Image (tube, rainbow, N blue to C red; front, side, top):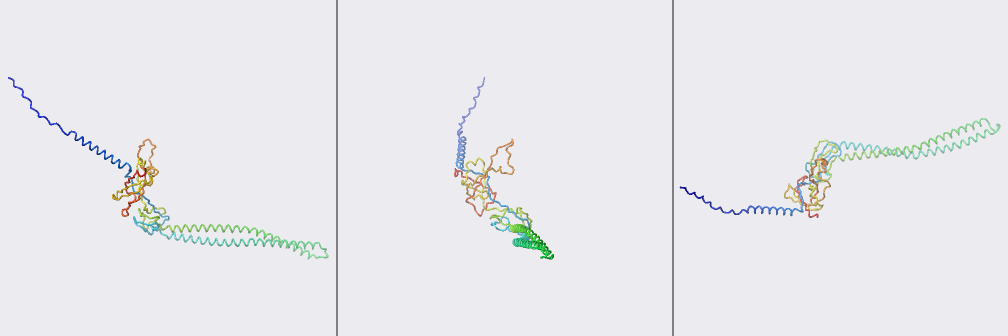
Length: 364
C-alpha cells in the first residue's frame, strides 16, 4: 500500500521592498548641491584672478666702497634703520689725507712756476721788440756814419797832393773802415734781435705748458679730495641695513659688497599664468592677504605687466628649438602697488608670500 507524498511546507510571502529610490534621491541631491556650489563659486570668482605665486618685492641697494683701505669705524648694526647721508662705514683716511696734501703741494708748485713763466713772458714781450728797435737804430746811425766816412775818404783822395797830406788820407780811410765795421756790427745786432723774436713764442709755449700742469695738478687734487671724502661710506637713501658682511678691522677693496640697504618702498610681484593675462589691465583693484599676517588685509592696484615671462629672464632659459619640446604654461610677473592696509608694527620684509586677488571687472 503506497503512502501519500507529504505536501511541501508552505513559504510565507515576503514583504515587498520599499524605499529602493531613496539612495538615488540622495545621490541626486548631493550632485545638485555640488553643481550649485560649483556654479556659485564660478559666478562669484568669474571676475577675479588670483595666484599664490606672489611675494613682496622692493629695492635692495648694495653698499660698496669706492676706495680700498682698513675699516676703522662700523657705525651700523644688523637690521638698523638709517636715513640718507648717515655714516655706515669709515675707512682709514690717513693715506688719503697724505695724498691730498701732496697733491695740494704739487698744485702750489705748478702755480708758482706758471706765475714765473707769465712774468717772463711779459718781460720778453717788452724787451725783445725794444732791443730790435734799438739795433735797427744803431744800424741806421752806423750806416749814416759809413756814408759820411765814404764821402770824406772820397774828398781826400780827390784833392790835389798839395791840398792834403798822406796822414789825412789814411785817417779818412781808417774812419771809413771803422764806419763799415760799425755797420756790420749793427746789422748783426739787428739779425740777433730779430731772432730773439722767437723767444716770445717760446715763452708763450712755456706758459701754456705750465698752465696745463696747473690743470693736471688741480685734477689730481680733486681726485685726492674725492678719495678722502669716499672714506666715509654713507647711506644713499632711507632704509634698513641687511646682509651686513663687514666688521671693524676688515680690509676692504673698491666695489666689495659690504651690506645691502632695503628701501621703504614695498610692492607685490605676482606671477600670473599666461592664460590669466587676457583681462588684466593696469589700474585694476587688488585685494591681498599675507601668509605671515592672516589678519592683515592689503589693498592696492595693478601697476604694470612685465614684457617677458619669468623663464625668459632666467639664468638658463629653455631651448625650445629641440625636438623634445613640452609645452608648459608660462608665468608672467605683474607689479602690484600697495595703496593701503600697511601696519608699521608688522613690517613686510622682501620675499614674503602674498595671495593677491585682482578684480577684473574694474578694468573692462
